[in-house]
Length: 435
Image 1 (cartoon, rainbow, N blue to C red):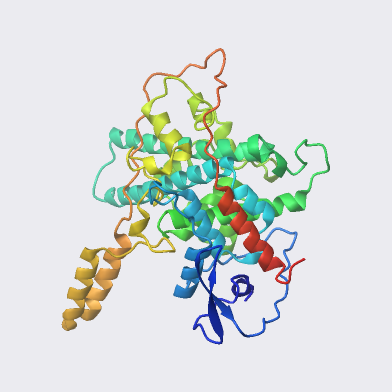
Image 2 (tube, rainbow, N blue to C red):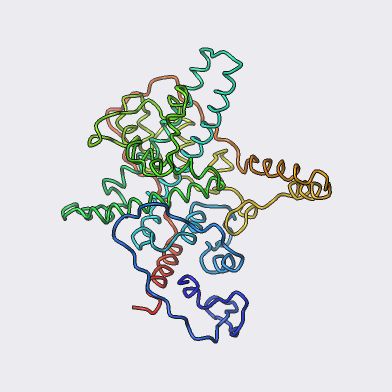
């Protein structure tokens, strides 16, 4: 495996080799005495990947040690040990198949615009899953209860919240599409937009970025509801007609929704047109005729005065320091939580209560099978993080000002150290014998 060669012969059983002190890393390094195995250079195709892209989720202990030693983000003195978006990106990059990686993808993942985009997507998907569960429970309750006017009010609030969160994703995505800000050099027609469109290259970057973002969102949300996340992300970016994931899985999940669920989860900014004129749901949110607070469009990028608690929540969620998320009551999956509560691969560590319950269940042999099933269901349903509670919209209508603010926010840079680490790793995987 090429990844093993990249790690400098770090053997599993430490056989046929010796240990030396590395002055650079200030640690013992195992050097194999065996001749290196021939490794073929990995070819990256130009065309966009199709079909299922599998990430590794069964990383063994030796590989975890390798990841922690070589690729995990190192804390600076005085820096809080909390999970950041960079930590989640690092896990996704480490477990990604090499054939979807590229230097351009790694560079793009380490842009402030892309980081805001990822955080907005995590927030949007988390709230989508939360409301999908809420609506499913409400539909079940309707079998024994009667709908009241208050139901319409509450569901309208859910729908508007989801639309605003999709708009947060759409504004960053629009910046990436037009090559604005720090994404200029990734535009398919070049930084100056003067050369011939590199459509195949652009399609590959889009598909690999989208698949990588699905993985990052899934990891950030505690490794739950992967199919729901993948289906919804592909729907909002590609529309129902071009949702390749739905075509492959053939779940028919939208047709199975009730009228009330469809109205809340899909929103009212839908536009059904001929295939060639189809816009993605994200673009429909941007050009929707509903009442939109213009300050949402600049959240995290442009300074706006007199912002509401709702806009402040969204701004901090997509662009604020991760160490302040818990303090401000902002939920963004596991991002912002203490890293000590998770293992190297960001899987939650069992608490003392769970360990006590498991020991108690093992001791009662007569109920072993039943307790095992119930224990699994309890762990599966146990929440790693609380639900999102968005501040409510202001009742008054926000009027559009005669001129928009243009003072930029202080943009938080991405880790240049981590970007170089992943670029170096990819180069070693692609060219194991050097250039």
